[in-house]
Length: 425
Image 1 (cartoon, helix red, strand yellow):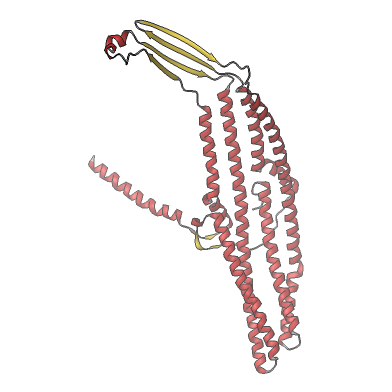
Image 2 (spheres, rainbow, N blue to C red; image 1 turned 90 degrees about the vertical axis):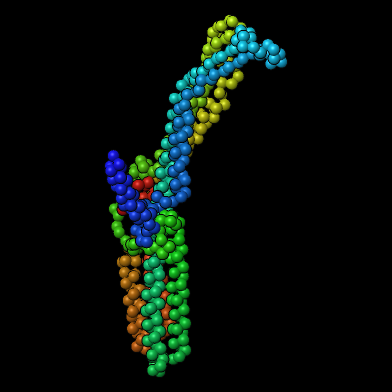
């Protein structure tokens, strides 16, 4: 037996040793994130959402309370003890001359109160659960937005650095031209000063990237990612075939806030039934044992409140008004769902058209205009103003295109947000 015990301890130690690295690896902060990773970490580590999820457990605990039956009540009344006449406090006197009343009572709930109370508690849990799912929907979209903002900030920073490098090459080329006497010193000074704008663009883009990462880290949880984490992915256009009527139909079936409103209506209706059940007066039954001296007896009692005044009229009226409120809230939620879908779909179509405009030739025209202007200027045929204007146009076009890509990707995720499920992957 000792040998088996020793083997068991060794095996247990090995299992613990193997489990510790696995646990540590599971808790290691992520250094790189994809968008699905970011959403998963947000749903797992966001503290505000974790706090809201606990409301479901609180509501389930309330279900237990609602389903409990009343406790029996034991009462013991013992009288006529001659404490001020110590000489009479004998065992014989206590056994034969004092009065003892021992009773057991129980409250019988009438009108199906416990069943209806339990049903209302379950309805409440359902509302809380669906509200929590809606909070998950909102956090998912918020995290996706933050992730796309990081992609935009990375792309903008990369573009700003490329612009700075390219313009630095232009400045260096014109420095050589100035040294060779082919360019006036005043014109070179103007070109050199323009480099400051590109350097400022890089600095602003670096700050924007830090801020975008901080916002994303706030959503996914500071402990879930490393201090210098990075994201995977690029700003990209992908075409999604979507039909507005299909989106509306799916949204009405899946949007958790609408489902929560429908559950709230059901809760209000069941609360009316509970209010009418509470109108029924409960009955208290009692059985009693009496002993007075050497006399022993049993007694029975019934107590019931006479509903001359309070018949729960106020709570009944209150619950009936709450039903009307819940009906209006459900209608408003339904209208809001349809409005969100229409708005998201319109935004998606508009952003898609903007992307198509840029890709139809404007990007290529801006690039060709810059290259042509640079070529002409470097050979002494173009003006400095034309070069700087071409640089500004190209930079503005590229930045606007990147912002349009980010807006398109965000509007695609907004479709999912409006519908309440992943219809755009």
